[in-house]
Amino acid sequence: MDTQSWITLAGLLVIPGGLIGWFISQYQRAEDRRYQQLALSEQNRAIEAQRLEDQRAHDLRVDEVLSWGKDAIDAVQSVYLLCSTTALDESEQRTHLFELGMRCSILLEQGRLFFKNQIVNDWGNQKEKAYKGYRPVILDQLLISHLVAIRWSDLGADQEFGAKIAEKAAKKLVSLLQAEVGRSETAATETGLGGRGIALEELIEAERTQMKGGF
Image 1: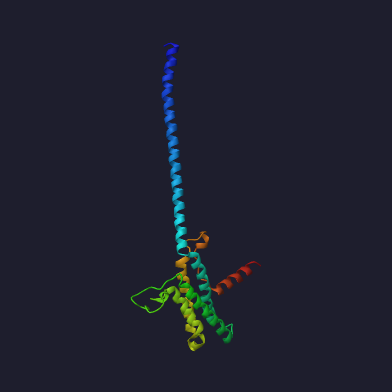
Image 2 (image 1 turned 90 degrees about the vertical axis):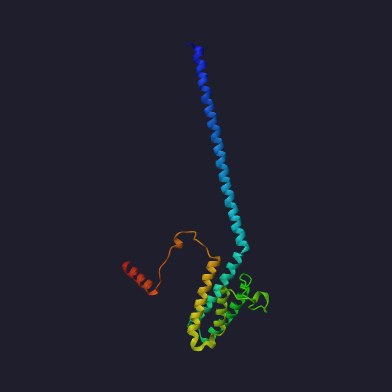
């Protein structure tokens, strides 16, 4: 085979190789575009999901309910703590409880903006629209705290039971608000770990032992 023949054969071999390389390059470019489109599609879905979540939170007025809820917890927990304390004289305790009782009533009425009565048959049909039907259980806790607070002096020997009722109302309100506006998960794993029962006597003894071991 002469030199020209070898050149011709080499050219024939190079051409298919070049075509294969071109096809591979085109395929790779197409795959790159497809992955980019998929990534963009995923990003758009994530953006849309966040938009819908934000819209739902706005529609449910989550921030406003949270603000109201913190004030409500402050009021009912204060009622419970004041009912349970012996640090105040009777007159001072009665005054603070009366003020808190009024506060609970106001918060109850404000809560009607977020939690409407449940209409059952024609119960309360003669009342104003916001008061027809049955009051939501979350607002009941404010009413309970209100009643305990303003009638504290009248409870007499039953004040111990009144304090227990106030405690249950406070805890019920927190539980309901947690379900309404609480987070479903924590930002850090450590803060979501379960704790254990706390006894002050045990903590004091542990500190005493630690101090002794330090000497």
